[in-house]
Length: 330
Image (tube, rainbow, N blue to C red):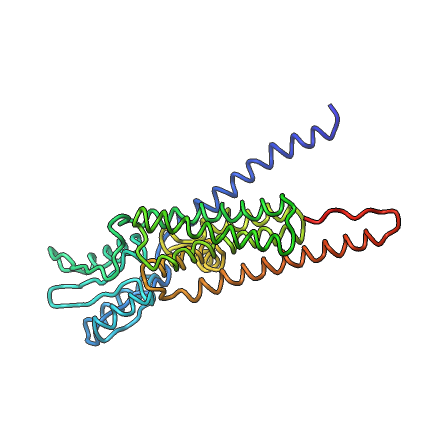
């Protein structure tokens, strides 16, 4: 047996376990290290009891980022604006919790457990769900499971556009068209049919579509700049890293540092946060994820157009060279 097949055999035997290890690390490590890290929580009140509660929460080694509010109404507004995940009020009967299961059922349960630990023996903490998850999806399962299909759809769109030989404006038009249609189909399924999203229909469709467009434009843009290897690189960033780092099934503040922050600047995490904002919180706190998705989209489309222009330049140079016929432009 020649040396080349032997080298290929060794490469396959070593490469596949490495890839599996990377996939398991990307998906399993954040889940295994899930815990609150500077989780924004409100404390209501100005008296000594509220001060003691804040001290108890702050003593948990940076688990919570405390925001103080003078009234329950102010705390409710902060929750509705996604400034905090919940708020705690100390009363004579024990602590009371304001939460929002629509912001993340995992976080709501975590806060409930934290408040229950502060309640007097035998007393049950009263819980008010300020922004409740829809009855059709009380655990937020559908929203959490929607990000991976969107990432796959974006990668597939960028790959198909590249492999079909579409370049420049044709490629950009295809990316925009697919994203718009996917957004409307996804909103029709999740909102109109299943009823698991309850916000403005067109805003939800826009969030779905922009997520697919950001990922598809990134993949197609990388492929336009570095060739078909860009498809693999884009898939790696958006699916292998972006999906498990998104925090959409829990919360970015529950993931290990700096995974949560990184995930919110990748398209899957930004898409999940944007969708949650428009579906349940009237668009509050949508500016950050909208900016991240817009950056990926703009940079990706610029790369797609630049790649098309470079190809046209090469074609024109080939046509000008004597004895050479121009290659077809897709």
